[in-house]
Image 1: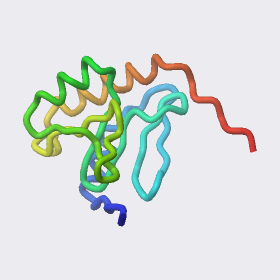
Image 2: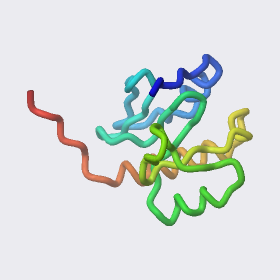
Image 3: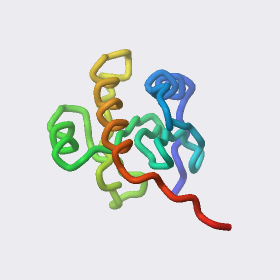
Image 4: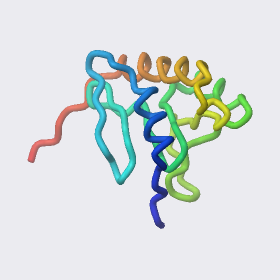
Length: 118
């Protein structure tokens, strides 16, 4: 499977959505941009899709909004807990920021990811 490449406008959107908060870092993963808090992924750009990680109840709430959907990086293999933001929100809709903050809060409450020993 060929990985989708994000365009410049989506990379700029990702940068705008990525909070400047303690513990938040950004790094590439599989040619995509990913936001981490304490080593755990909470925000990602996959092709032209922006996705956030949420607890089940909030994920269901976001999935009920038209235009959102599960993040499916490989056909038939959705990433559990990750939901894409509606494309209609990509042009500065403040709801995108609200869901990114919810994701940051949730993932920030999880135990920090331990670094793998080499």
